[in-house]
Amino acid sequence: MKDKRIIKKIIAIMLVLAMTAVCGCSTDGRMAELPVKDSLSHEGYTLEQVVVLSRHNIRAPLSGKGSVLDTITPYEWFAWSSDPSDLSVRGGVLEAEMGQYFRKWLEKEGLFPEDYQPEGDSVRIYSNSKQRTIATARFFSIGLLPVGDCDVEYHMEFDQMDPVFTPQLTFVTDEYREAAKKQMEEMFTDTISNLSDNYRLLEKVIDIKRSSDWKEGKTTGFKTDDTEFILEEGKEPGMSGSLKTACSVSDALVLQYYETDEITAAFGEKLGDRQWEKLAEIKDVYGDVLFTAPLIAENVAHPMLEEIKSELDTKERIFTFLCGHDSNLGSVLAALKAEDYSLPDAIEKKTPIGSKLVFSRWADATGKKYISVDLVYQTKDQLRELSLLDSENPPSIVHIRFKNIEENADGLVEALKLEERIEQAIGAYEKLIETYGMADAA
Image (cartoon, rainbow, N blue to C red):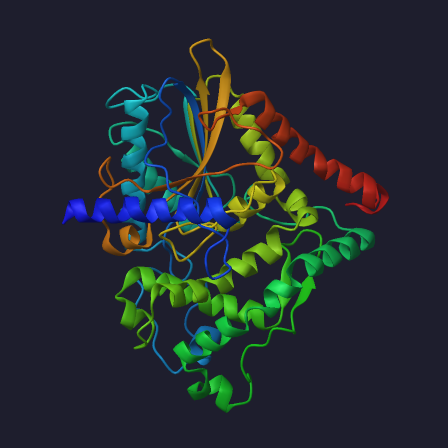
């Protein structure tokens, strides 16, 4: 049985590679899914440092009883093991597994000795001050350092957002707002318009016409032409309209999908993988629209980019774990001008729950430095089955490439070139201020 699964995986990867070589897209017009690597390692190179930017693992939906989730469907949602927005029991178990997988990799590469007990500032674990991020970081550290003592660092009062992890607009003028909205509309109006089929599927799954919202005239369904962007200084980019509400419902369904069987998760509907992907696509589009337009990403990702640069520049640091949100990963990748990608074996195609953006620094035999950037995530089956991660059952690893940056034959970027890209992304924030009026900035 195991050999059959391996053979199927090899065939699937070969098919993806073939389709990518031919047309760069899948047969139904979607972006081609990238082939999965079997390891984070690079033979012939010495691992010197790792910086991980992580999304928290499985949580309960952000809103609970009495919210739109209750009134937009006649169905009862999954009985969560945690309060709204908090990490679930499953999420904690999955994150400990991921921490152990990283420990084994770091031991294999010689960056960590076995039973590592860090001293000084060699390891840093820093999270946003929300329950789901602190808990994720703690569970990861249990797997990473089972006999080590490394505190989870957070800077704000519990349950408050840390400015480093908050994807907020710290600079807004009338001129900037107009330019950013125009860019968002140009990039995403068609994308939002193409969600019509996704919305109809969502309405069917939640049986919206039997909901109290429908009966009371509070909703007539999801529309593709009512999105309005809201850009205010000191706040996250926002929107009003159907996409915002649909995202909340999509998010809850996706989280429910990870926690229970597929038919129960879909309120009795029997859905295939592609249908689950269509439901998850709604929340993926919502995230892309709000956080990945260049003028937005350069603004909201600025504090996190500075944090990543600081960690890469800290000589005594060998491992860093930064635990935040999907908006952190999405905006950082956009600000760094990552090439487009779509993830295989996941219903969330951009930044799946618990996913990790891994910056690993390597040295070749001559001492020349390189960096690899990879997205590491548990597949939909690994999330649902709580399957143990090891060399025989690794998480999915997809290599991230950057526009106009060449890689060597081993898929590595010269460290100086990627560091320069990070500095350019940080500098883009200052250019925003210069371009759109320093006098009006806070």
